[in-house]
Length: 298
Image (cartoon, rainbow, N blue to C red):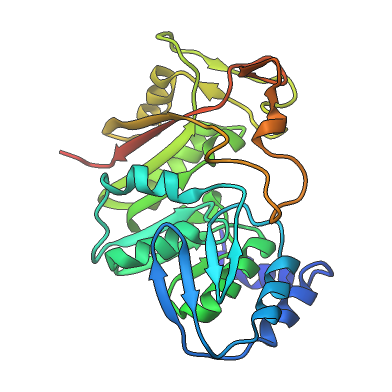
């Protein structure tokens, strides 16, 4: 696979008719000095900016799925309070001087938070020109050296870097061949590397998985929701030497909800109003398992 040709080709995505006007907005932003706070809210402060212009720019880039951010007085109350997941996982990783990748990085919220750990290299993979534009908007002020690639997990093994730590949060259930995806993660690691993975799961001691007929929680591209035992089997088949369950959690309205910064529906619309323990399709409501996978642990 010629990764360089793919990267060049995907640069053209930024000229799409729905993206090009947003890039023009980015180009019009002034270069100003800012104070950066990398807490639960990634906060950018400055006294030198046109606050209305910042607000208008951020609004044009909706929907904002990950966050929250505060940009020069504009609070971007994203659909997901991503700080909850990040804080849940933070005690399980150490990134100083490591080469780190975030697969399905969205607008980069997690990567901006990771800057405080001082990784050697930080690369995000996501084939979405809108999310890259949101990332570029935030990074215009933060001025980090994070690399954002318009690439997917399938390109990881062909990338010109191998990684010490790979984050893959909320991606696996979108893939029709989960073992193939796990193999791609494995091949993207350097020796003794690790993957921090999260995915939906269902309760049970059997080695089985749910295969939704057409959608799960109103999401059409959900292919498999495994038990934890089944997930472990997938990971072992992909070549990983160790499978460690870090955390489990149930998604609730305190973490995912409708705000003025998204368009359309959110979790409250995805669950059965008469029984929130089930999705509108009648499946078990979303819950997540967070695992650490190790390569060449011995």
